[in-house]
Length: 445
Ligand code: FCB
Image 1 (cartoon, rainbow, N blue to C red):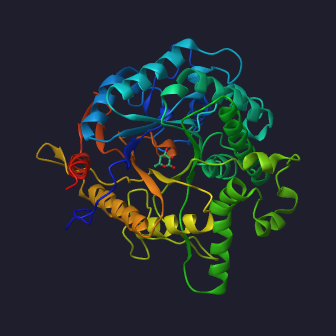
Image 2 (tube, rainbow, N blue to C red; image 1 turned 135 degrees about the horizontal axis):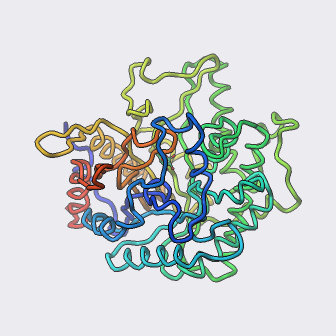
Image 3 (cartoon, helix red, strand yellow; image 1 turned 135 degrees about the vertical axis):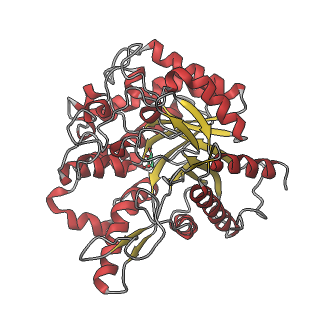
């Protein structure tokens, strides 16, 4: 198959990266003063994780970080997106700082700079300190101010060397999967609570940005959302109405307050008693200028009024997660974000990738489906750029096979294979392709 990226040129300052998150790779769950996170607890709930695994060892990145940075550098990317484990740097989420934890991220950031990699840091990739959950977690308004303190502590220690800082990764996932469907930590099932959580996440984002700017932060500040275009399964009025509603819940519920300082009126009116409790001034606080919006894109969302739409049954190509491969949705999404939210000066694809079969053939992981997926999505980013959308970064999810939340270790998203028995890393064919592609870009080929 021909490679759709062959003739494409991106600007020399385009940010190319790989993404990971702390809980999914670090392991070292209780060493050097790290406190437990809600994911450490959630993994112990019977049936919560498909293969009954946990994050105690994961990819041993806490020990192997230097080799992992060498690996990242060898790909030829210029950026690395990682997250800080809050309970590693502040065991209970408030009060005393854990020097050993801070020192780890200090070394990691210096290690990136030494290898020519821009550090892109995420504060909350879901591993909230369990001690804060014991006091209500994100449903408790006090967590907002603990988060601001955490943000300021990280800024004091690392801020001078960061390219960017992101408050939250995918608040929709924390709210809906964590507090409404109960399939992610903390495993609660309460829609009103989930809405309150989404409000507190947004408020903590805005308050943290304000505090970071007041503290003189120079790195780019933003947030990362999981977004998708939402389509009706059929042209029926019922499916169309359902698609509008779900688009509201996924995209407008976050983008409108962030950029316009209000929740979408149609959704708010529907909520009745479930609407989140707000204080005067909350919406103004949430709407802080974003230096960038991170977009995590995997697939589109297709909505049907009567039963969930099944892409496989509809004859679509799907990944091992059962997600439809739909690259044109990324172009559509970027165009729409730029049109509806022109306040955002720079859009970054902060995650994109897939779980695909990893056949070992002749001593190599020949993951053609993943390579093809990356090629088609990078071409989709280029198409949006040609239409004038300011997309300035693309980062692959993920560097390594890792702990894929409730799927455990069974689903592999890495462009580098991890043998969990030996911790050996082996770049897959997709990593080799990415390296070649980036080498050609840097030569202006
Ligand atoms: C995203 C998460 C990331 C990873 C990918 C597959 O929702 O941000 O940690 O699990 O999905």
